Length: 164
Image (cartoon, rainbow, N blue to C red; front, side):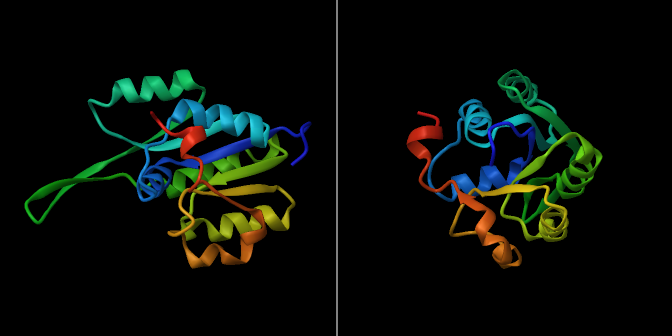
């Protein structure tokens, strides 16, 4: 990707967080923002996350780190006697990628979720796809395989991006 390009990142925070945890390390989101700016020449990074009351300190931290945080309302449900929270951000990520479409040169998608197949295909067809950052090389959708030449993997970035 050229240094002069104005690129935007669109980050599926749940896929990123779960993917990195599957690599047995914890991501420092502030370091990751700097990494996106330096390596991918990101002008803006949109981070999509389910809103859970009580996590305001996390949201403030993410905003101070530089992310434009887009919240998704969450639902709580009980399964096997445990309370779970659901806040799928796929629709919001696709929508904002298209709302911002005229404002960026290349989109960097941070997710290994196959639900973004058609979005990525559209971006590639229109020469707007920069890179796809896959949080965990061992766990991403086969629907994305045809875009392998665009993929970068985070598995071995613990020393650079890990929370120590």
